Length: 352
Image (cartoon, one colour):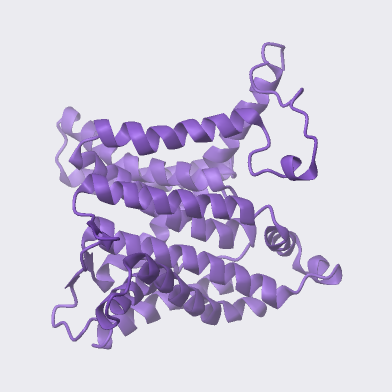
């Protein structure tokens, strides 16, 4: 019996309510963090940092934000990229217009600005739900991109709309190389993921899940629906805003509205569906799957001798097929498959 919590006694309520109460989970997380912070920077190539690891971590953070809103609070959203754009442009303007602004503080303030926009566009959730709520958040996507394109102040009167992001400097140390940017993104994502893991286990997280399962019953037993839904929109948008700032500063190197189009919103939604709705781990699994899939497909196309034009169309076809597959076979995504694997390890080697 490889994976059992039997014999791991808790002598206090605090120990019983730990983020990872089972020792195997704690060791696994510590091992993954050790590999990510120590081993990967020593063995990975600059291409791996720039093309795989950094976008994976950033998309995982954005997927985590959408999962908080959709998976835990049950509120559909198609405007994830818009909130990312708000965080990126807000961070840029804070750095530009406030002398001596620390970039980490700019990232946080960018997330706060995205949270405020999320609260405004989350107000329709108090009256509508389902498909109609998704349509209203889709309007957020078009409205935010339109504002960033048409209002010159946001782009500092740039004629092209494409702005070079400021250099990342923290405590006098400049983050120029892909390895340094990777470590910065990894540190931010690790901290925010642990915060989200703790948050969904708190009273706030339980109120989100109560509203998700049945909002009328949740209101009857004392949950305040307006505060719960708007809190979910605010926290989700904050995570997406920070992810958007990291996307601009650590991945693209530029701040531009077209980088946060509708395709990015749908891609993050696919990550939630494939990884697992309502799962912190599923956000990382879905992001890893979607980021690595185009690379795998390009390798397959290269070795099979197919033309390169096939790659983009093949990618869309595979995405669609995977969405249908997971919705039919395993609606809870890759995270559920991992959970099933752990359940089997609890009983191994006995038959089940």
